[in-house]
Length: 396
Picture 1 (cartoon, rainbow, N blue to C red):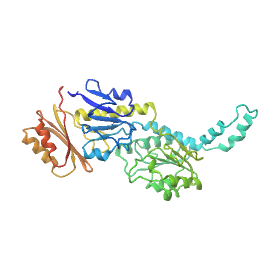
Picture 2 (picture 1 turned 45 degrees about the vertical axis):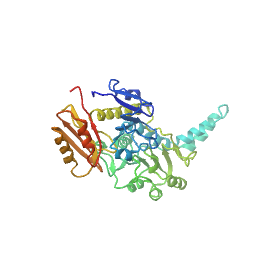
Picture 3 (picture 1 turned 90 degrees about the vertical axis):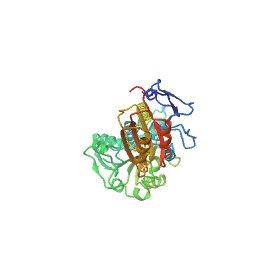
Picture 4 (picture 1 turned 120 degrees about the horizontal axis):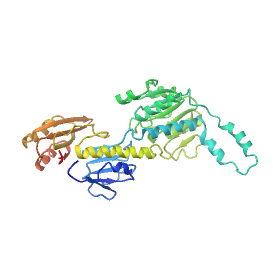
């Protein structure tokens, strides 16, 4: 364990089991922390917040980071962690529920039952006469198209196959891990258009980026089969609301099931809009909190990075008590300048790892002796260096 006390500002209600991953002997957590070393957040909007200069890392107990000023934190050399996959099972189950609600007309059927007169002598007859209006169809044999084959998309594909559905998948940026976990029965689509043309159900599992904004729009919704069910449990902006309304009106879409109750859709007969329930299970909230707490701790104590949205993944086993972590712009001769600064200070480099991601690079250096403030200052003075953390351990 590190030989100092870390302070973590908590902006939302975070699972106690997650906070327990930060041992009280080395961490203090709370809502009123001043000069925090790190911030843990769920849904709080940090864009208008004055984030203290003491903050070295931010952890979001969830998958998305739209509520965090990631670009500004990158410019300060501050990694922003999230918890991808920790809520995947919760979202998968909600997608399945959404498909069943659409296929079996459960929302209008429930509304019909709620309007029945419990004192009516003809209650049974009314029920029997009314149920024909809600006849649906089974999922088995239907084709589910999945756009985005990350952890959630792969779980949805597996569950759909077990329900007897055919699955068509598209993801131009699929990772090796996701490819390994994807069921062999999933057929590969060549484009978003291929998925829209050939599916009865379409489920979206992509992040909201400029490239994915209005990914589903008026032009490509026209390609869908009449009565197609569109499910969006990823991000609101990946679907054009106006295009969905047009497609629902024409019958091109049979249902739109989403986790984002936009004012345009409220009380629409063919929209099931849920109040951001995707990760709202006890299990998902706990998994996310544990995952992000572990990542923050490993970063604050060892400089290791896993699942940061703006930094490369970097991990190095500690073989020395003395470690320096350096975030810098990904430009030529940076490693040479770092090594020179350490050599000038008489430090022997025991081990080093450097990785980059886009414009960001990150370096971990273990040295054989203590690092003075003058060395940290010299490293910070190198043009392009964004942040320097000295991470000594006292128990090695």
